[in-house]
Image (cartoon, rainbow, N blue to C red; front, side, top):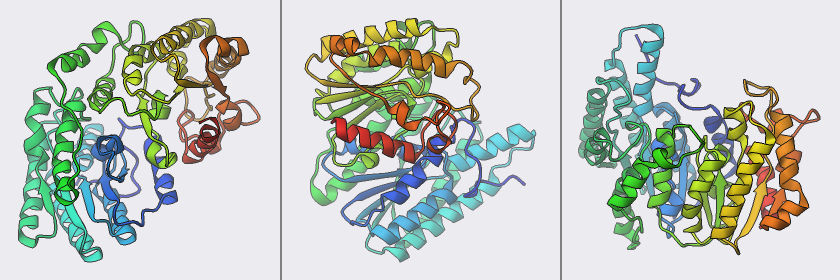
Length: 450
């Protein structure tokens, strides 16, 4: 019999383990003990939402972890309810349990049977809401139902719908929680390619606008806030859909669906709010910056896999925030995706990017972070990378270049490297991406610079 997910299982193959390993220590370091905080706990849907920007008038705690199954989410939700007794707690979980079953069956050429997972997930969710009501009876509990993911096999969606029905029936019977029907709100739009560029694996700006609208009604019901989350215009939507045909993260490369989903989220958010824009790739994208750098109006604009040409194409969106400062980190993916690319070629792309930033944002404070080294740990692209990164950082650190483009160079690499010049094991989860300890070092430097 195929079983679902337990707390100790490995992450799903389409996710890098750094996103999971890096978040849990962060959550432990930032306990929530104030009931006025709105808590969103769950899986990828929660994790990848830019909730603090969507609802700037409310204090939102994003406690989503990509790849998590119901058992993982339940552990965090119970702990959060006991510690914070929040006024409102939103939960999304279950999809990854079904995805794991599909992956296990494919890998082992086993018969695909979702029924045991349907029964288990429904019971686990019912028990979770029963426990949460007992632990924190005054907390308003909300269940965000599962929706169609065409990226999975055709049988997964009917199975998830059966769980939705069971959870909804239990809510009606007990009154412990309210169900928010994301299946009805999202599934058709996902199937038609309007709400996701990744067949439902992630949502785009349209998709998150839908989800935010449902959450906003629950928040506005108690405090009268208005969530400024504009829908895309048709022109904006077509621009995103056609992005890879005219721009993109690198010459000759195809932009991934994730790139499009993430970019469209940025384009859908409110503009002109000042603050600090963190402009980069996965090292920005995977950081939970509202927790890492509290007290600053932060706008993370990282897209995993992006290259410098893609950054240049995104400068206009960054500038639309009217930021006080921009923190720029890039170039790693240029080296990783093109092992033969010379430091001189990367510096040329950097000069184009810096020139574009200065033409668009001439007075904005600009901090450029040097390319971080890799570690031999699980990284096939390690050979020759660090030497090229050092050469590029030499260009970036040159006082003449800093003066020409009016930026301040930040040597984060020196703080995170070991005696061999590699990314220290203490600071990396997989040889490239960063641990919470590494982000803390980075934050110390940012506080000084900002």
